[in-house]
Image 1 (cartoon, rainbow, N blue to C red):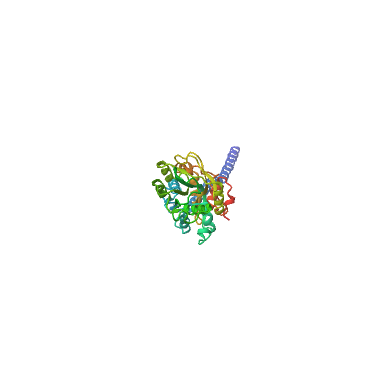
Image 2 (image 1 turned 90 degrees about the vertical axis):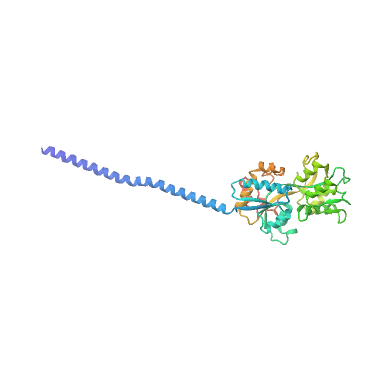
Length: 366
């Protein structure tokens, strides 16, 4: 009996120890369990913080892009207006978050003034004017330098010399006594044409000057009221295509000597050709000089705005090329042609080009 009681007490003691050991094990496991459940809470907090930071970043970028922006072009029917309309359509269909309005203006010089006066954000110019505006020289000497920066080169603008096919004007040296269209007041064609005529040695009174726009020049030439049409713009020009469809015309070449003299006055001028078949009946290339058609931006625009603007153009070349042939060749190889240290890139455009591995250090804003 005593032996049985002793065994019973011993068993109770062992069970008690086992029970204590079990209790200790549970107490040890509890913090681990709590830690295990705490980890997801920490991860969720970090995720929420990252999401919040991303939303704030996107909000900051959105704040840098205004709801409405404008592009200054030139009169409707001319190349820059057509190209500007194509760019506006691409951006307005994108998720960039802004609405682009195409402004019909009297030409590139007006676009520079509108940008400097902060009336438009972007404008079509050429590399000659971009350099003048940035350095505040020539026509822009009354403005502060550095207000206009480059975004991209779009296309060459070819200088056109056009006469009726049966004209006795055989060369660029035969303008004496003729009625010559020199471009509209305030437009870049008038400025460039005057440089060209000076390079050729023409003086006031050598011929009758008609300061009219391209469409009027085409109408006058078709009706026999104009002998020579002079204009600079990206071929094919819609108005000239219409003229060539209605009347036989010929495009006159500009010889090497004349181009060299032009370059003395305007170093940005480059020798190039108007490609064959640019116009009805024009089966051969025609030597001429070009300036580079460009889009410029106000220097005070945000980097994000100009970055997104540049990105939309560069990533929609096929659509833009369908609007105007001059835009079908936009590429990393063409967008800085004609630029120099006097036409530096806006930091937003620079950022995009560097993202696609372009070396634009030569055109970096100093």
